[in-house]
Image (tube, rainbow, N blue to C red; front, top):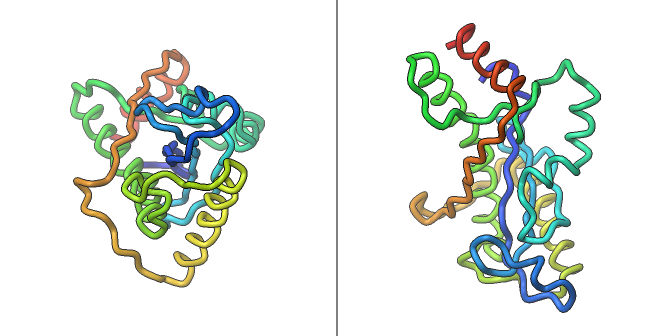
Length: 195
């Protein structure tokens, strides 16, 4: 994908039932969770992650309330809801250019999905098959942040991880289609000019 800085996605990490605001932590998959936003480069190293939002929080809300979004908004020369710097996939590609864009976007998005999968496979306590983190909420946040840092160190050192079968990886793609004419225009121009 041309001019790509990084890839962003959210992932749910199961936690034990919190004692306060319990209902806010029930995610769309009906378990208690934190919704963690991750952003990575194409080298699959975690660039940044945000660990603070309850499981019911929408990915777009998290993006709209993170420092990286604020940075991007104030630096327009860099490119969740459709914005000049943030491209969403097409729902129904029709033309050859749209299909080529869809394919390139899908490959770019697989980078963050693979990064999250590698992180969770390396630290099974984060994966849905590992069960919920059974510690207090504040400690769960510390565990998630710590494993993110350790994941980056492992990736820098070239340490391998045994990945789960892709069929077992969780599919958390909501394919949100946020209506924004300017962003759609930019995406359409990119399709015409590059694909």
